Image (cartoon, rainbow, N blue to C red; front, side, top):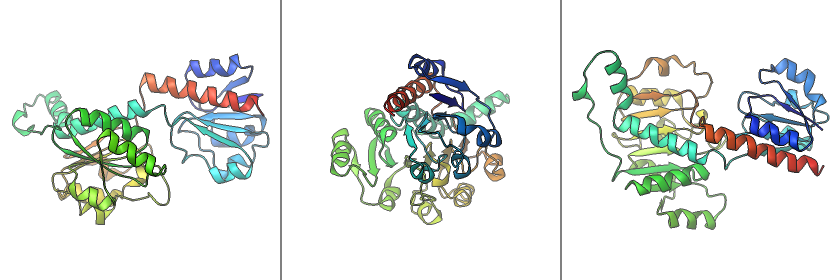
Length: 310
């Protein structure tokens, strides 16, 4: 069987495919046009976030049996088309939990202690000590919107730091997930609105869907505390950009830190030009050596096991 690796994948993952007898073709910069022409040759394809497996790409994948996403989000895969063509879609939601949770915590600290501002101004030979009065996270309420693997790990870290953690989630696993959240030490909120009213820090941990798009909108931002900060390491379309930039400029909330955007690379000029209480990073929450390797090996193992039984 033939596997196309269309986005950069660590050698450890590629070796697993090769050790299982698959022919591996590496084309890390393949264009959509090239992919449409070539995808019909492969039994499996491995992607990260760059490659978009849209309906017009997949309809040419006549031999394709499995799509492997080395990562969590599947919004770059047309899952309805894949299901229609009986193509298995495999991802690695367990891989980035530690990496992304730690990064979200880093963004919280960056905003709370004005680290980004302090670094930038000190590099400019300014001594802005008096403008860098921040606050500790200990004793603050963290609101987690969504409670998957990443949020669970973040809850454990922040509770250990002395934070009070509240959770709103649809809890797809039902009572089991609720019990797990309570066991960790979280309080459960019946609605996202109730959580937004109380939390000083909001961290988003939801997938991209029609139900979650713009879940943080103008109406809900108005519910947030004036001293609240918003963290998004999940998906860009969870936030209404225009509502957020207006709130930041008007100081309706204290700040925001974003690692994901509606359009990537980021082109929103209002975000790019506004840095007073806004921290921006280029979708790097999962960019740790450990996570990238774990995602590569996990997706290779899962796909190899699946394809060997086809």
